[in-house]
Length: 393
Image (cartoon, rainbow, N blue to C red; front, side, top):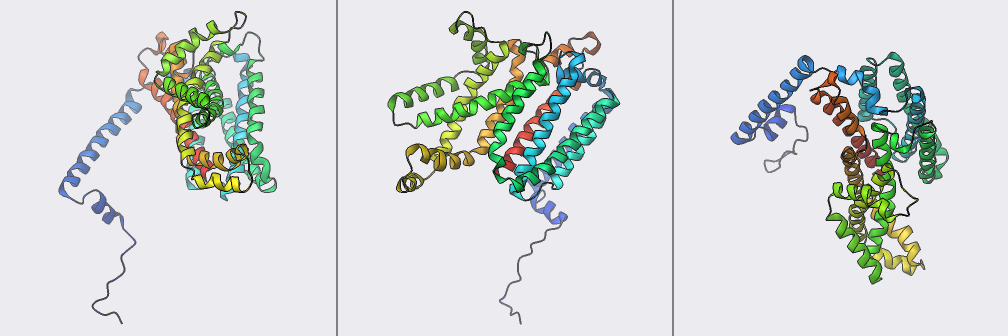
């Protein structure tokens, strides 16, 4: 029997009314702040909805949807862009399925909601352009889901396939680049729109990662020359603005190369992003290296591993795993920084938006265009964030 001195166990279930009272209306000033916040949100959201459904002219998006994604790419060769997108979607689905094999599940409620929103977006955005584009985009979504299911089966039967994914993606990149450029009068500098943004972002990310790791290792080297050169590079680059480095890459890079070598403007932009991002990435990796206990290195030496094997098999994998969020954060920042390409004369996603707004038919449609561009940037950045969380798991 329960005596008078015994206490009842604490309640673990909280109903919505109790949660609201505890978190939003616990005191009189919290109640005032909650009411003010609700009124402010209502004012902002109602104004946006009123503008979106009554004043906004979304025809600017449907009329220029091809320009946003493929820019000035020849219309007769647009099938190449669809094939390129199909290769990326298929490999993305396979990679998703292989990574999902390690976590034990492929779909959850959040992923199903995201896939549903993507399906609705494909239909609502592509129908004004044509039913053919809508069917192709929905087919891409089905291909993604089917490839993910196949990838999970492959991951269960061939566990080592995960280590081959980077090489597969590298081969697919060169294949896609050949598909896009194997057209008469189409060069690297002629690419524009979202294609150019993704190309520069992907190449810069792939290049700045190994350079950043080498700089982090060089900063911790016991050789004074390597250590001080790494420190000088990191501190000098981190003290310069990105737009300045991009202008230096466009103007000064051809000056330090032989006279018969003139890299394309896209290559110079990639060099500028790589130089800038590798310095910041080096500091992220260095933080991961410093988080590894010294006992890990001593244990590796006791097992007879040389310094190279100790670094590649013991220290570096643990360090990179510890700083995955900060590394992906740097990648996301690099992707958003590609919006500066319009300043150095390249027609990226933001640059093609400015050309559309310069059309007399669409003067003053800044809100519609920039909201659409912001939605594309958010979708790409959130996808990177979601992929990093799956990779951590």
